[in-house]
Image (tube, rainbow, N blue to C red; front, top):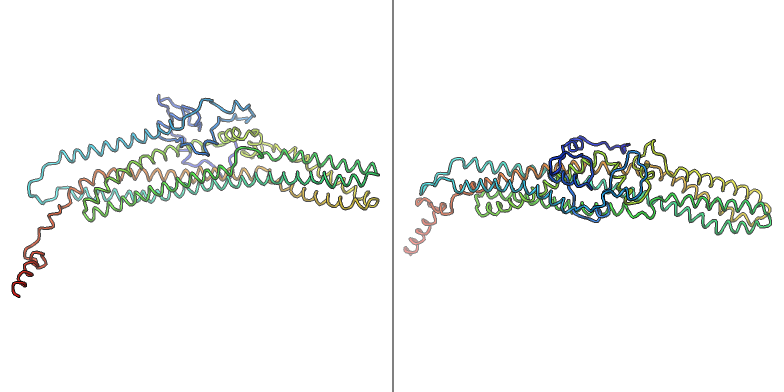
Length: 500
């Protein structure tokens, strides 16, 4: 299959696509993109490397379909629908969430065991001891380094979020441009059919009435009428997207709507973690126990969110790599199922190579010949009829003007119907989804990994760090000889009063 211009599967796509797949019984399964198959759902869920997102209007409309055969031969609708058993996206989501929760559970168990050991197995301090426990500085610095690593991960997360948003925006722009092309085709066809119909009803009818005394001229006018009606009939078959339930404009709006909330959710998550890191560092610098305790609780919350986002990102990244390694079969079947268009039309626009001929070539050729015949017939009538019937000049001029406009629109329609434009939009959509968006997802995955590791380290270090903070009554131990001691100030004030 011909790859879209400018699109080649990247190294990340090949690497993620080559990861081994296995189902719940540890049996190897193919790595092709087939989300409608139960084994694929189990495989990706068990590895936390694919995602079935929650239902949205876009995904209700874009249901996955089976693969096309290599010959891309048309098949009956029942053969395109695949497995009639309904799949359950919530079940697949729960499986992915359960595996992400497993990693979270192991982290929490490790943190709990570490803190229990710290609290219960710590040797008792001698009464009145002011000496800090050994290793206290190492604990504090390890917490600081972990939080700084978390801040670096936040910067990576902002970059990944921006890259993902750029890729999805490129996908939406390509869909909008494709919708503009399809709408322009429908508009040109409708305009030409209306112009020819109006010319048949008015100018040609008037011309036949004027030329009625000359039978051979009436026959020529009626021949032009038949040619115009034939052109209109051929043109109506060129508006192939008219009446199709799938609208690229609506798909682009749904994609933009989902992406807007995804982008906002990640920005809030990144800002929340940034605030937690900064206020934790402030609490360590100020040796404020209450601030460190509050930030410890917040760190636990962000740790849960980081593990959840990590499972979602890993699932989406590898599922997307399965799609991007060979997107043509899935897109062809999906579009054919949703639109009901023939495989010849879809193959021409999605593949756009020499092996696939233009399915509209015959209609275009017949229409062009018919328009040329009409033009020659009108020129013959103008030479023979106008000298004898001066009143025929006005409808003939009107017909020639209509024919010139129709021919101009026809050449524009031929350019729009060529596969280059829509195939270019298809390639731009794939580049946005499979390059920028996938790269952004990998950066977000790195952010979640750094975030989870940094917060887990901080949760283990913070309780030991605040145990080293001096108690509040230690600040009352002041030198009695200090002239700025509040007690010395009180004594001087009493002496001043007694001397008055």
